[in-house]
Image 1 (cartoon, rainbow, N blue to C red):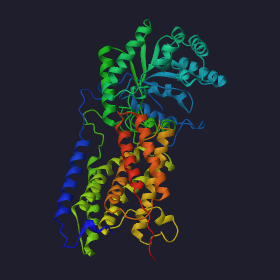
Image 2 (cartoon, rainbow, N blue to C red; image 1 turned 120 degrees about the vertical axis):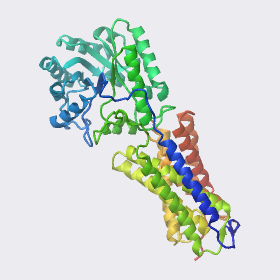
Image 3 (cartoon, rainbow, N blue to C red; image 1 turned 60 degrees about the vertical axis):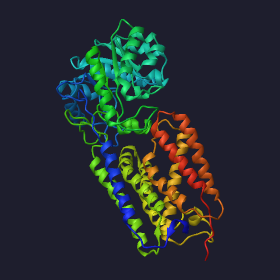
Image 4 (cartoon, helix red, strand yellow; image 1 turned 90 degrees about the vertical axis):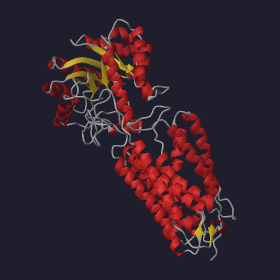
Length: 548
């Protein structure tokens, strides 16, 4: 025990109660700020002013087109299209597989037009089959299908040459009576100008979030307009349809581009307003959130929808304020409760102690309690949105559990005069092992945090594009560890090898990731700062033999 932090005098609870009140006020103030809704000039979804068109994929829950046998029932699609008919004039499809060949018939019953997609790839026989079915659909539903999109980003994926694509487009044009186009990101239109001669109109994808140099949400609409005008100069004789544009509501930051509910609503609203003023057509991506895309693109891939994937509820009903945390009162309440519990553990620990801690001990506990109280709701929100598949639920659930336990266990250790345990106290030989239950629990929490933190750090170094930044739960766990190490660090002992290796990993990863992600990504900078703090905390660890 570090006696310098303690005084043998009657315990006074005036200081902790004052700090507790300050902690609670801070938590409430931050959540009030986080939940502040935005007010838009135009609602992103307004039944009184229907959308021009919206991309439609029918998959719900565990349904995925990545499993070829997946077949969506006509009843499920009929429900979706009846809902979409209330907010849009048209739907764009991408394929005729998985039951999507039924969309034109169902759309016609509810008054929707269809931009029929033909999915092309490297399999020539499959391409011919897709084309044959789509051509027949245009003949069966001439008053429903308004255009045919022959291929979607097949040049971007490198699955077909421009010459082969042009031949497929001309083949379809010779068999149908509706306009024919091809859809790809705008750069690939400029690189493959020969496609221009084959199509009736140009369909470009402009996704500010996915640009090589990501665009901030507040500049997204202006970027869309700038690119549209640039393509119009290159291809002046044909109409330009923006076939995909929008913004994600959840996922990792890219440079200064932040996915969020308010940013999605703002970007969609501003693009629609711009399209109305400039008189050009826009197809938004997409109608419904698509969970299956998270397997390919990470969290952000599943949250481009205007409608929730599970409840099929509008994300932004007209007239309803838009907040990033619609359940903020519950999240704030949980955070306040956790803060109170941390202080209760600290004060309860002192009931049988003959000493009174100095102000620095209470301040450290208050910082941990406040950080945990503020971030609990954020971490829980991230757990729900970022966990896809059992493995990810276990990983993020384990980190959140560590984030909740860490301030509680560190509060007990701080007021008991104990230091942060080393890995040797749990996994080492007998002369280092502890028999204290609280120390074992704290050590396990430390190990879980180190292992999950190291996995995320290595992921950002070697495969960062689709990974989420675990800044909230990681901060909840690491800040109490750092405070305990600062206050009650052992004065003797030797530096353990395991902690040194983890410390080096976290420091090096933080430096690389911070440089690689750039200075505009606050999620990255925050995560890197916690990696550094964790690395310093582990580097200061000292292993001490425990007497029998």
